[in-house]
Length: 460
Ligand code: ARG
Picture 1 (tube, rainbow, N blue to C red):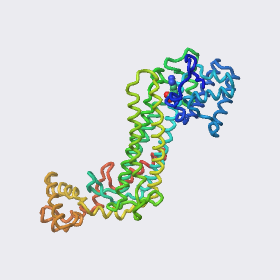
Picture 2 (cartoon, helix red, strand yellow):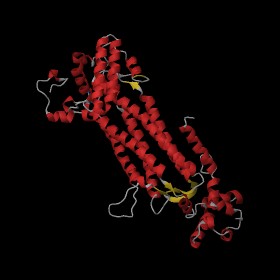
Picture 3 (cartoon, rainbow, N blue to C red):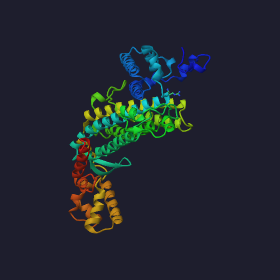
Picture 4 (cartoon, rainbow, N blue to C red):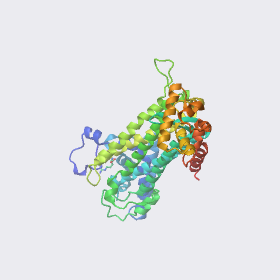
């Protein structure tokens, strides 16, 4: 099988080399971008008088046929063609004859792959942002129903202060919004066209880079060709952005796993999104959030993998760079599937508000409120108030009652300056609603936060 680059070679490539060298079995995913890039390039060549109008028409027709063949499954992907760029060009030439050989004028596979892969990544930046928004809608809906539902706020996985469940979910809405902003800013920064950079140094042909950029929906053309054909930071950005998003998804998943245990009992995942055990008939396992947590690992792997591939490469293009694609494809697919299934798992889960509230009655969640009371009402310095409250907690432990349920007489015994009005302060809902500072958990503040996310999702 003769290679497109076989001119300077006297013998053909070994099958082993074909196997090792080829990217066609995975980069074929970029066929749309590749064909659109070729159409834009050919259109520009014709406008510049480098191709005739008839040649352009033939190329357009031929590429349309190639696209049909790919989409109908009749296109033959061959390892010996090395990559999709050469596979498609070869088929084009079979269909339209020698005119097909003119398409690669003023172009190299180096700018070709840079444009294809960049456009794929840009498209995925948009699609993933949309998918995060869809997840946020569902999280927002659940959060909105639970702005009055008490849940123990924790630090160190220990009961800390009472918050409401809507506020807890609001934290994830904040994270997901920042995730979207990262995908969007990456899109803005990277939406520039590599086409016309050719192999590394530009081309002597009279190309119009602005035209191809415009035809492909880019905001402009890249500044330095050596950089453009060589760097893959746009791909690293999407890997980092997916990694950060998956880290957020993984933290939420970890909470869903904890919450669906008997010990917590805060949520129950629907049967549709739970699995059973092959031996223990009673089990209902949270495989979905566990896998989400697990899949985060492979996405980090893709990020570190590509960082490592890139770190030692001299300018400009090196074949190592071909290793950029599979990790990105895998991370993108993982992200898309993860967002979709997490959305459904949350949409269909049962929130056990009663258990959340009951859990607040353990662990003296309103202890900080007693200290605040001593400061505010009794003029006691905070450090001393902290100590007095510690004594009250110790008393509660001794009596086996939560501070929020402790009889006034015990508190009075601990410090005479405490008055009956303290009882309101120790009440858990009062404690939650007392946190009215901006961004705080008070139901009213939580509602404001959720309204902010609603506005954001509706595009303000
Ligand atoms: N398949 C190659 C890749 O994905 C395309 C660019 C090849 N360029 C070259 N000069 N060998 O990176």
